[in-house]
Image (cartoon, rainbow over the protein chains, first blue to last red):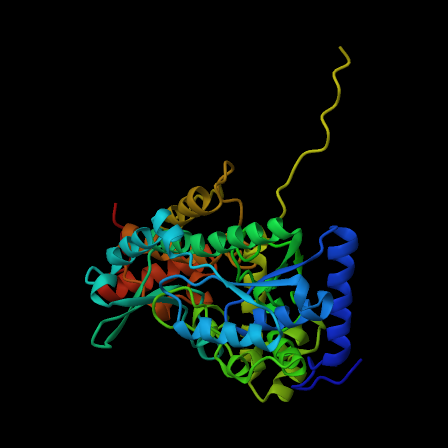
Length: 331
Length: 100
């Protein structure tokens, strides 16, 4: 057994790039009988790496990169996505989904739920909002109780707890974004006889940080086996632009800037990933605590948080159950 | 549903809420009051929010973010003790009566 270190999840990026490119080529061409790849690019690290891997697998002439901002997206996302596409020799397509989301009544449905817990919230007047979890996983081990943070036009931030009804409505409305993007990606894939390549990493896929039939609605997962820190290793190897490598991972879903740590993961990936590895490989908690330089109780809290999220999001990864064939009637 | 001749109304109400609103169970709450709601996969993050809303609505206790911890929320017994502590702090008396 390899000795547990803080760098335990480090990989050989050259070898892993080759392995993933071969995996994509074999499954898409031989398994799915599709010619190339469609990748939704957000200006974030995961889709950047998947675009780079897809270009390695199929060549830039067989890869379509699609940018799908909406009115809440950070303009920086499109700028970085264009830099990325240029770096990998792919011509990016721009599909603004704001009108589609208006058609679904996405914004009104979401904002009316926010107003029920924060009546002054008015997006037209410049208020912004985001959904957050408590940040103190290591210190308190508090359970995952979501709140909404509203930022007023004067910059004043107020955080109020969400009720279950409001949380469900905000989530359902926001998920229209990911499902609209999935529809756009499949339009481009079907028009070209390409496959849609998934961009979820292991942290997102295994802990349920994706939308079922949204960003989870893909033909093949390219990096769902990689921890986020491993994705960064591949990004450096593939030559992903610096601006994307240095950008804080963001949900880019809510109108206020919201990083993935405050929305979901509650820890820096450099801490989360080796502890997750330790849990999967049954490394004793005292050894993990000693190596990571933290009390055993904090390691246990991280173990519990990972386990809880994996367990409670199984529904997202579940294929629709179906019965075996019905028995023919003897009559 | 667990039956107990010495049953107390707070535990009964919590068990009934979990059975009907979180488990969608036709058999009622079939676990012990000390069973871990997290480990037994009875509550997820939405379930935590639903429980917090239920405690406020049913017993009139204000649930703060800092209260939402396994020590208070991970079993029927812990939830009931949390409610009693909150009610006792607000209205000190031997046994608090839940709101109707």
